[in-house]
Length: 591
Image (cartoon, rainbow, N blue to C red; front, side, top):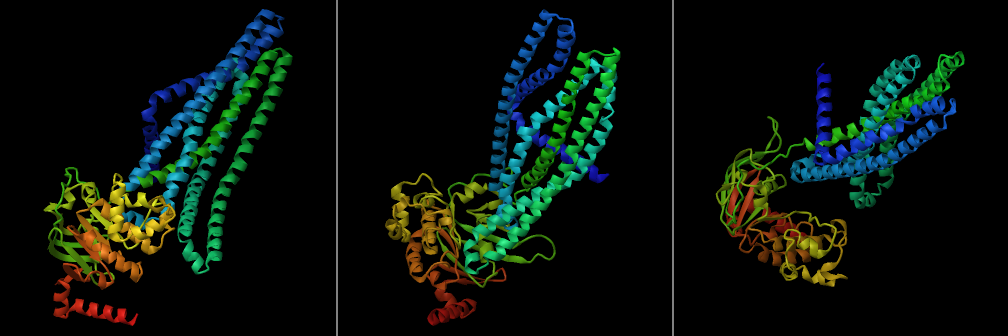
């Protein structure tokens, strides 16, 4: 009972969702329905007109009546042509606009989801939602709407016409309806799960394809092409089997409907023919009845075929709503204020944080209490898992603290809008992500209005201008997806220039030099002093050479700050930092 209630609520919600998509275009939808009704009425006219032509024109040798009936035929054909054109155009126009809105809504929603969401979900599966599932919904909106209403109206109109033409023959025809109803229900039950499974399988294929192509270099390095082909073959086979289930159902159901249609036609030919011979019916009645009978089974067939489109579209809509229902982990408070121009003071007020919830969730930060003055460069050091990256994520408000508060210039980050915070913050991650396009576009990404002089000045400051000038087209050189035309070090230098052009008040460098060679690292160190000058900077690095000049160093262990001081002070204290520095120095000398 509860399951049926949930299904009912789900169907109602999906219907509301479709109505919401179409509401902005209500007047065109209304015009579409008017043209659809006109086209349907015109399509139903030939059967009764044929009866009149035979009984009142041909058999009575009445040329005048026949001329009028022929004119009515031509008029109905013209109305059908014009109305069908309007209906087809309006269905396509409304459908494309509505789905354009849905894609934009999905993309906008994805922009607001948390980093944790993308850690839990594969990019390819998400892409499948906005491509394959929207495409399936496209077929439902464009093909399904017109078929549903046109076939429904046609079926109702044919029933009325059959009853008017010959009540007795109509009742004989309707004997097939219970069989059609039972068969339709059985087909619906059997196909519902099958169509949902096909959506899941195509999403799995898209997800695996995206992941494999993104990691193609790793696949090549380890010679794993055959294994990946085999895994893709297995996924492809699962998709084929899921689709074959729907094919088998269609192969049984639709020919059965056709066969039943043929049996009913034979029944009407026999009974109607006998009635015509015995004088209980006219030839025109039998001819018109058989002509109308085609319009009786055709809409039933079309509505049955529509159900396959409906199942596929509803399964896709389920997946789309699952994505739209995914709540952002972090949202601006209803009374969030826009953060004014900041000086850059950071305060951790007894901050603790743990990923996930529940008693088994371990703390990534515990009882961190400190103040970072504006303009100070603070380096975070410690072993992997010590809490350095979590510290930086809290500063950028990718997460909110489990306990305590993170404040910028006295503003609790939970009380300000995320955009006003991040527009004054720059982050250079361990692996610089560049977008396809030119070097110039990537450097100006955080500040699209930056001038050529500002872009070049930023590149000069971080040491990137040298290699950029040597590219074939300089700053206008295309760098490919993820910047594949550049080396890892060059990508990182471009990321530094991008951060500098954005002119952030708070800068986070998350192991930004770990993927570069020694020569490039020295270039970055030279530019880093320019990059952090006058800004509050959080520097995370495993290479301690990059942080010796920091004004302050925090040593972290198990989510706690265990040492705090300058490089000289911490070395002299001969504590944990001294041990880390000694080990790093030994490794560097050995290398």
